[in-house]
Image (cartoon, rainbow, N blue to C red; front, side, top):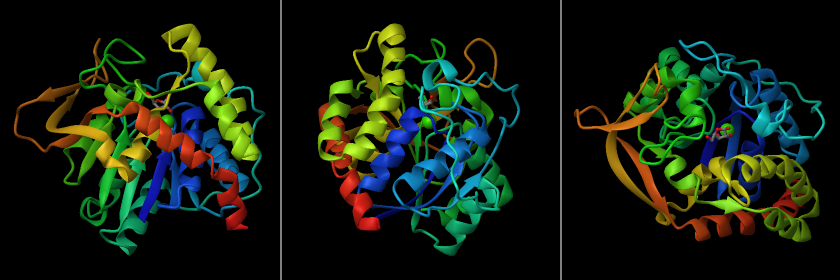
Length: 312
Ligand code: BDR
Ligand code: CA
């Protein structure tokens, strides 16, 4: 059983990751923290609360950073995720309220209460993690480890030729997170771009889990259209779910242990470059058994409605 806190900007593939987490009995979701990125942070918070309500969970959601640490904010990714974050799905209106704490405070307090027990999974820009390190540097030793969807080390970027979106949205935060004294695994485009799901896959999930499956089918339609028209894939890349599966099923991923430099500005802003300068290292996923990762994702989601029923 892995205890996790998810730092997220939902977002369509974030929603996939969140439903995957709720459907996987090996994961205990202690909280979510939200960050700007795919959508404004207030939208991310509403969407995270909505997803928790959808499965009958009372997961606390603490809101985090509305903007990056240093750079001018990039536009939100409405062309990929829709203005409200879930494609054409209507604006969410959860009944529960957010946690009164900031994301940084929530991350620090939760990990201090259970030292060495909690994994932070970060699938948005890394601003909240950088702010948490500033708020209480002890988080670096209190956390069990950190798994991140972000970066493109050997692969090309997705927002520019060089940069992956989460790192591009806050390269200064990314560098602080890579350099801190905690155990980091980076699941970037080198692997996530190879793990592809189609509308047929989501239709199959709907056969065993009609409620969650149909929600995911609906929001994926928008996301997959983006991929078909702009990336030349026949389905969508499973970015954020891949980071969760790298935690539960690490044997499906190959890694290298390297130091990373994040380009802070200029033409290559957000590029994550391997360097040999003896600073702290991170585990970078270099390849994965894509078919097996995709299967873990789809098999887990097939149980989503049953897991929801068990929670009630
Ligand atoms: C990452 O950027 C966001 O758009 C996705 O949700 C994912 O976290 C992929 O580069
Ligand atoms: Ca995300």
